Image (cartoon, rainbow, N blue to C red; front, top):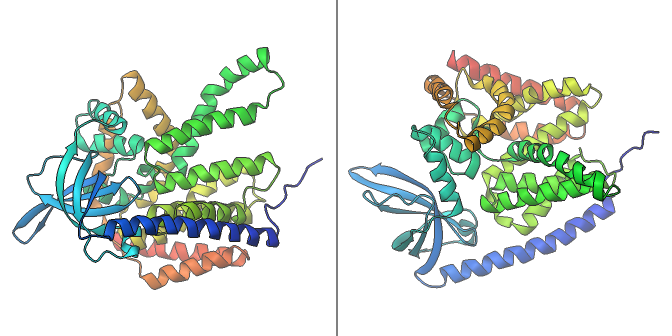
Length: 420
């Protein structure tokens, strides 16, 4: 007999849940406001911050370097240093900043502040040691940067960002739910036989699914902490936990309610993620996957597996063009690259561990050359608003799904026309 999975909440329970989360959100926001007042209380403030990005910039005849930093409490901000300032990417700085006329909104998003670097912490973090290990295995700095982005969430250079954006594969380099899914499957595949060996001999009545999930989730949590909780990866991890809890209790996982619960939970404890682009792009990807699986659940699993990559590509295209405005004749091939990446990613990790890290270097170098034919294709904000409205309506009625797909296909055809 087939048991039907139940919904997570009744309407009354859902509103009660929202009320509790609203209280948590208010408290979290109050803590952020307290940190904001401490930072902006005087004309200057002394803080520790880690350098996320460092790049050169020229304005008129003046050359300087821009640093993007993140403090220990999650505050992101920009500052500038002289053009001869040493390479400090990934290092922790102790500096005095001058947050003149800083608003609370700027504090929650990001802001610019004049600063004076007092000292540089030369002690290498675990992430820096990993990046040095990766750098020692590759000769090309772009290839090194790609692997550092994949394994340690190191930001790509501005040039590589533009390249991968025009090729439609930016999502592959930003560690997110896709990577978390591959890693969790890999860990489960490795440890399942080991657990089964001991289970058969010492604890045959144990709940293997629960124990393995707790073990794998613990490793992923450590990895999340190691990477300093990138928004997209945090969303994926929380959803993994929520999804397993629901599955274990016989509650439906593939529903917009599950996604809504995940979003509300994360924003309740981390309000500043409301302004994080990576977080909302990650949410959008899951939203469109769920939309497909809900409305086309009658299709076979094989057909769903084949169609989902195409569906996600066309659904995310309007968002990609609105934000990045980059397109090339190779952009549609991102569907193929995404499929192949699920093999490349775990294989590349294994090759780095066994001493054959540079096997794919020439292939990646050739891949980067494809970007030369990129074109700027900017989607007007009004079209994006219409697309989002239709997307919301598609939750409730399948007819809007076909309208949504038609809208995306039209944008795709217009984009291809501009590059041919």
